[in-house]
Length: 109
View 1 (cartoon, rainbow, N blue to C red):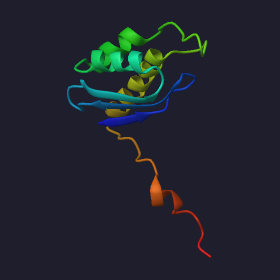
View 2: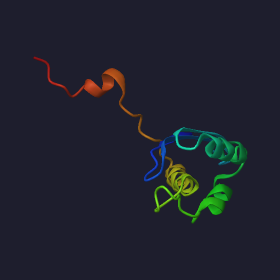
View 3: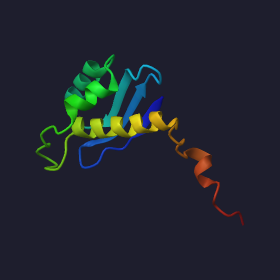
View 4: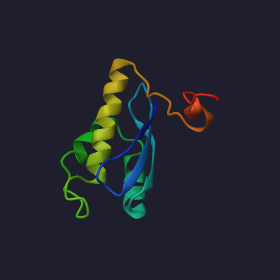
């Protein structure tokens, strides 16, 4: 399952997480925005890890000095918790409306 998450109150703008549905092992993690060195390091470290292990390690991380509220690792743990809940319920993430799909509700003249 691929999951797109928009982190809150951090420099990163988007996380894309790919997890094996059956084993719950993280296959890939990519990001947009934020500190490239730190997030690329996190990405390389968590590939091949189980979701629960990453959640346990990243929950309650110290806050980022720029946000004073949360951190990218803590936001990643939040995203994985949401993703895990969806997998437990057998749900998939709704496909975002981009391109022409986003104009389907516009009235024609």
